[in-house]
Amino acid sequence: MDISTQQNPVRILFVEDEPKLGASVRKELIEQGFDVDLAYDGRIGESLFKSGEYDLILLDINLPHINGLELCRRFREVNRDVPILMLTALGELDDKMEAFSAGADDYLVKPFHLRELLARLKVFMKRRQLNQQFEEKLTISDLEIDFSAKSVTRAGKAINLTAKEF
Image (tube, rainbow, N blue to C red):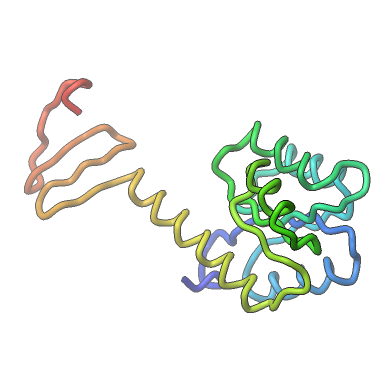
C-alpha cells in the first residue's frame, strides 16, 4: 500500500513527550505521506482526539498530565475501531499486557527502527482498507451485495429482498 498516493492522507495522532523523538518521527511520517498531529502531553493528546478524526493513534505510556494507558482507555470509550499502537520504553511483559488490556492493538518498544514502525502502520492501514471495502460491497462471480445501499444484484439485475432476507 503506497500511502503517498492516496487522495486523503492517513491521519495520525502521535502523543509523545520527548520533543526530539516526536519531531523526528513526525517529520518522517509526513515524508511518507501521512498527516500527523503531535501532542507533547496527555491533555493535549486528549483534546486533539476529541476535536479531530484520526485513522490511527501512536501513543507513549509515560506522559505528563494523563498517562498513555489512561488515554488509551478514554480513546476506546469513544472509538472502539481506531488502531492504537503504543510506542514506549517500557518493555516488560506486564507493561505490554496492561497496554493490551487498556485497548492497545500493538506495542513497539523504544528504541525502535523507523522501518518497523512504518511496516506496522501499513499493516493497520491495509486491514482498515480491506474492512472498508468489505463493508461497502461484496462481489462473488455475478452476485453483488451492496451493504451500504442494502441491495443485491445478480448479473446486473436487482433482486428484491425483505430486510430479514437481506
